[in-house]
Image (cartoon, rainbow, N blue to C red; front, side, top):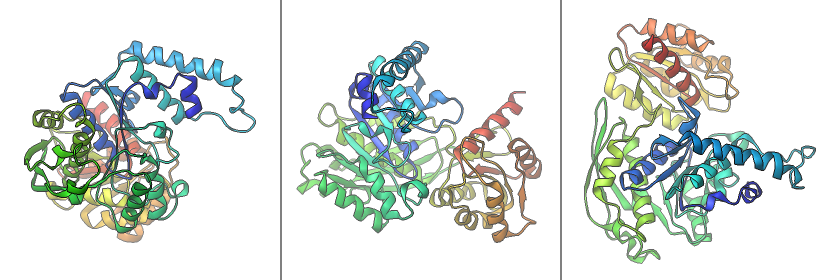
Length: 434
């Protein structure tokens, strides 16, 4: 990736960046960070994945798509790198298998778009892991790491310690780290790596307080304040003085869920640290950025005029647990679950979490972008709840139809994979528009 970027003129150095990694919540934190910066008047290039509706969701500016001319010019330059410059570089040889991946090329396309649009700042989410992720050529103002769980175990390792080690790869020398609440194993890894890198670690449970949270059908209200004494011995004491101000922010997010308040706290903390050298972050920008937040596939109701059909990209046990907790608190127990996950996910653990809360569960294929084994998922769920409660409908379109038919007036939750969420949204939206 470093060689690719050098061939393209190092576009990743066109603007300062904020870098986000983690197992869950990183997409929400990325979107919140970018939205607040936009409200503060910055031109913000945002890179995140996966997309739910349009691939340009991954590469955007100020919450909108780049101008078509930007995509085209950046694409032409990307083609020049791969067709003209790359073949002559001896480090890339098709016989050795050292060719750029789709993800590396997409990442370079983002950096080229950001450069050509003359953005002020980039907010960049890792694709997988961190240490070897293609985005990790950045030297950001601040790094953010969200909650760590067992995920992508065939690639990142099958222990929390191993996965945390990969995520910790985004921690840069002398650059601060803002860290979400972690289990002891992960926290130990991050503290050790931060010390090695001389990176000031801001652990959210130690510095922030979230209180008076109210979750409703359409939003989450909460209060956020910071503990004033935490930074007294910090090497970044002067830089981070604004974080420790005992101000209480009353905030409103247009997404239901307690976890979203925690994601917002991560974003706000990181921005207060990152921007202190150049500009203070106003309460108005924070409130406006969060209030105007739009993230497809995050506890989104795609049938607001009829029986609720909520879609959410929860794809780990903890994220599924939080999603179902929010769903049942708003709509009660006994709804309908439409579920599908990729082959590398812990279907058995998610079955134990989901089965007690729904009257009917339909297992389907989560799209075809990633390898899946819906038959194995079906077996995992039937072992928990039996065949009477669980249905297997491999075709996603037919699964959506049968889910709606079974639901009648019962609320529906579609989850387990962002790729499933994308398919559900396309199918249901097409029916509604028809």
